[in-house]
Image 1: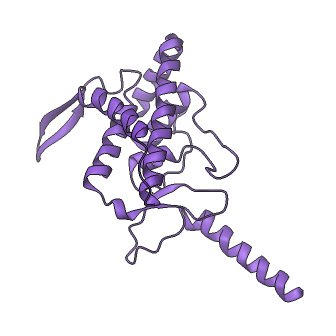
Image 2 (image 1 turned 90 degrees about the vertical axis):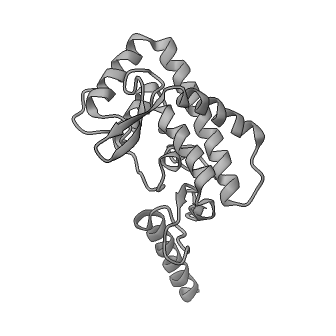
Amino acid sequence: MAARNPPRFDLVGGRLCLDYCNTTGDRRGYRDERLETYADIVGWGWRAGILNAEEAVRLARLGTRSPTEALSVWERAVELREALTSIFCAVAENRRIRPGALDVLNGELAGAMSRSQVVPTDNGFTWLWAEGGKALDCVLWPIARSAADLLTEGPLAAIRRCEGRDCGWLFLDTSRNRTRRWCDMRICGNRAKARRHHERVKAGAA
């Protein structure tokens, strides 16, 4: 990974864990997988701010040197994403959460918290990840922590699924009236407006 800028990923979820869920395309039709390799996970971590450029390059090289371990981390990463998507879709749609999905999250969370430390800063204290940017699975740690924080601290009532056709991405609705319908108005919102306009024109012609 020699790029000077992080790869392109859309970050519209409002929380790290929701952005991670949105690394596939349509959940209601065809599948657009955006994490096909371990290098893709590293690239997403860079884009999401989990890693800096130096850490991303280091992890990409480590993954190349240890392909078996990198494959194992990739499999865990995909399993975690599917579990989180199942959890947050259930929350958004007021359905019961599948216990197995929580088991996956809790398994990754246990490993993440064993690598976390509280350290002092100029303004108080903060979390620090031991081996952050060095362990192949370090990208997963803040994702699991983000999911746990959202589930325990909320706001759960603000979690939504995009209503755009062929989308279904997750996002946190922070609008004043809690009426946001689209993951991104510029994409799904404008497509919906264009589709409604086309239907009105078609109906008028008929």
